[in-house]
Image (cartoon, rainbow, N blue to C red; front, side, top):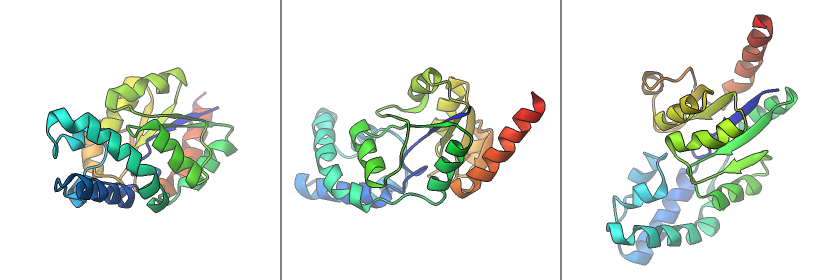
Length: 206
């Protein structure tokens, strides 16, 4: 039985419209100009890392808390699944597998997205970044971690999982391979066929 971990933003969901709208609302409320288009062009790192580009260090935690308050009502309804996601989760289920989400996003908001989109996931872990994502992947004995950022490659490698990346996020295929990705797909529409082939090869080798 295979266990597959997934990143959330730009791997399973196109969170750009929701994040941009929330940053715009935060900017209007605080009076601090934030270039939301720039923000969503580099999604991946934790929220506090991005906020530190716009707000004084002493204000970042409070502003992050306010962002997370605004987020459910603004972002969650605006964010769609990326292509191939439902089919990918179904393919894992068809093979008797388990699907996890391990993300840098605030865990409660990650769950809101999944509930809103009616995507059933076996376990959700939030507030984790790069190598920090490895702990739940190791605990669940994840065979594969799917992400879209070079930091997701580091997460997979630290956990001893196959690093399967998609190019739906900010990192190009060449950058992902250079970081150590084992497999790079265009998007998750290619995942079910890859999974079938991967499991056939594993069976043939055993």
